[in-house]
Length: 431
Image 1: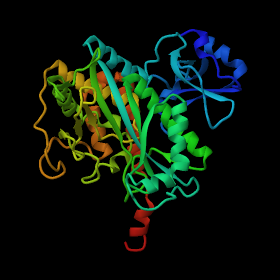
Image 2: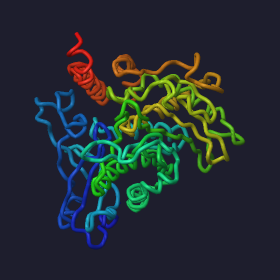
Image 3: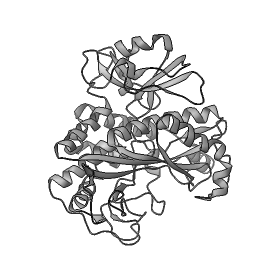
């Protein structure tokens, strides 16, 4: 792109430039419009530790960036044309890319992990398109609790009551270039779901990072707290991140033959089934992420698959030639989209390359009986599977794989050191 491709909307006084960190959280800087031309040409320096911090911004010594090498810099350059932020007059936002001080890729940039798998898919003759569904809560920022009551999933009266905030999310984030297809109240007070239109996989992942950041900002501007935490309330529905895959050769959806699954589609499912357990850490990397995974929660607990079945781990949606797709349902809304999509795509491509065949589809209740292999339901097991997976290490690259495992181990150790209020309430005066 040329400098003119990054021109600012009329009346812009401030430009936001950011990119996704280790956890898919958008981080960056704000610049005066007068300095934007310099940023286009020279980039902006910031620490590589952006890719080696946890969600609380805590740092630790990692193989690539650490106290010994002084947490060195990288450069951030704009990658997309700045667009007006509708709720901030004079503010525009652009999505960025990272390069090292040597102008090469940053080895621990999660975005590059996905790029590697998409290059592989292209070499196999496929363009991979992904649609994303994200669930999240809109809460009172002071209490951290919902402002509405009851479930009323898909309820239009409830949707109307939430339109003052959810309507802005649909309309104004659409104006920022993210195609919102629909929204609806979900299965808990304060919980909603938004579907983002399907597109090329890298674009889809970028949009998830940007969508979550803009949603949090827009919610704050309207006196709400938006959270993508997987399970904020133990007795209410969890927040999922469902990914819908189709593989294209030119204008043809290679996943379908006559409106049903093709051999390629079946092999893609088989690859997902084979690797679903060991890639679990990419979809749920915290203790809280595994609180979603329980029977009869609409979150899967095994690698089963089936047609239009919301109890399985891998759901197939049939339809016309363009709409046949494979949906993977186990990941939490906090997952890094680059790492999640990279692992899922890598598994699916393996299935195609090796001509794998899936198990028989589950026709009924996948929670009842022996359906597929169990997936991890706690972080400890997920870490053990990830640490033992040479496949995941190859997909993520040794440096990113080590970072992801280390962060999860730190999370697990942190929670092991806590004495919770529940424990105090239950044991302090009884034991």
